[in-house]
Length: 101
Image (tube, rainbow, N blue to C red):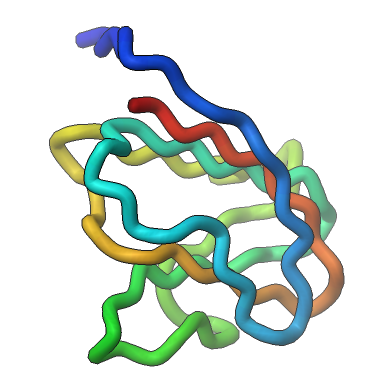
């Protein structure tokens, strides 16, 4: 099934390093997220709330290096996390992010 998002969206990029980096804050208007790893490193995502720690190495949702199966992750209205998104990597890693509203 193809989902269409008519409310617009925004594209951005973030460089993730060895300390937790917030990718984007909670916004209840977000109905679609695509995070693509443009680097040669594995990146670990952690959807977090105030009760959970920020991203940690080797924990959470892993995004493989660019060109390898699993180099992006998508969330939509059926599997969306309603919280902040954080990431961490072993070395500087560039991510492309698209948020649909």
